[in-house]
Image (cartoon, rainbow, N blue to C red; front, side, top):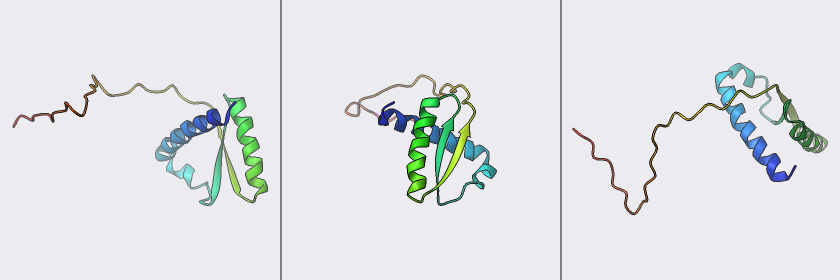
Amino acid sequence: MSNREIAVKNMLLGAEFDKYIAEHPNFATKIPHDSTIVFLPKNDKKLSNANLKLAKRQIKSGEKVIFVRISKLSPTPKSRIVRAKIENATTFRPLQLAI
């Protein structure tokens, strides 16, 4: 797994974790403010192993590391956007609101 793949997967997990914290604020109180969070997803052994290697280096350098084990991810919800439209900025005209 490339460093880019690891980074992208961790960014996606980070975004999901932010949503989880928003829904479960008490969970966040268990995480020390000065620690590094390392994700260990059960369904992605390669990413878990790569993250463990990174965590070992961080621990050796004196960082506080907290592991977050992720059992699974629920299916991605569909977007709530209906009939999006792309317009070029050079031909864009603001919507005329009826008053």
